[in-house]
Image (cartoon, rainbow over all chains, first blue to last red):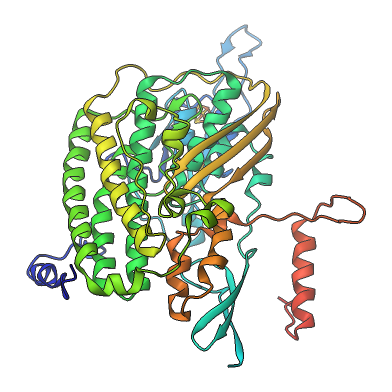
Length: 134
Length: 397
Ligand code: SF4
Ligand code: SF4
């Protein structure tokens, strides 16, 4: 049976309830702890295997070897200097789709996903995350 | 009475996607309709061939922003079939959970769009507000609201915890009570009846003849649902009904979708309360063997069909997909005929179209039978020429 204005009761009820929308940006938005946003890199853990680069669907990540001494060096006195391999990770935030596949690909846990989602910037340089080994 | 031709679209004919509908009117009545697609071609099938299997998965997921899980699952199932992987039951359960949450959110989204088309914006806002419960659940489950990326080849990427299960169950209670309210509203509200009953008629024979699928076909009285007809994942063991309606009009489509939400809630409760234990993924082999596979999946909008062919290399050698809108699009011209111009947006929206999933391009030379490859550059030049003939010069841009 047709009841005109059937939604009216609901409308009145909603007039006296708090808004359903969040107050963002005035109120802080808190994504879930498992939310995938900016990818963080720990250079000390990276071994430069390039697996993350291979599987990145957006070609957003690059890992570069900073110093060429990636083999042990034996000096004249027979002393062996162990290899020091330092890496730099560049993530292009304009390309990254925040799928976190790189996090899954990395078996050294050098990459992890954070909840930082406010990445917009008018400064172009801020749109590339560069993390180097110190 | 003289006939008038009205072009509807390509900009925003019913929703925020481009498609062109040329309507021939006699007074207010639509006497003929011609449809045109092709404004949103993205070349995803071709692009998938130049990516490895993992990269292609994320690309295929982006075929659609609403049925992202449907497309991704269809694709990974194909690759898993080719590799001969046996999916763990817990992974199957998590895929079902994500798929059914996706169905609920898609149907609530559609209800809002349909309400907006008939000018019932109150309902639009309520249904989209209630949809947020599901979006939040999806975010907790997968880490994103839209592109869940929960799948991986051989299973799923994240396990589901006890608290998450309880949280989703709580949200389902809320969604269920809200859906029951919408059902009550749909049976009582006279404006909704006036705008939907008898509009966009698609009789059963016509729907079958035009290969309609999904809620559109079920609203024409045909109980066809891949989850029942060709069960995949855990669906063969679950208890749920295929909702149909004999109304054959837009009201029937509202009916089918709203009751399907309740069925999805039922499925979700069964799965969440009886989660199988065990691992959530198996290892993907380092090399995908040569082979081919076809998979069907009941997406919220209808049947998705994916085909994947591999040649033992690192990339898929062919990916072909058919989204439900392509199947349902045929019926739109039929449904528009005989209706009022003002109902056209609603009729188009009632199939829940997704034009970007549907656009394909093929160059066929009928005389020589030769195929041809058109590069982006060729296509751009052609479009510049096309507009030049119409007096608009884009070549300087
Ligand atoms: S999150 Fe995805 S797109 Fe971004 S760098 Fe990692 S793999 Fe690439
Ligand atoms: S996968 Fe991990 S270890 Fe390998 S290069 Fe990438 S960040 Fe470094």
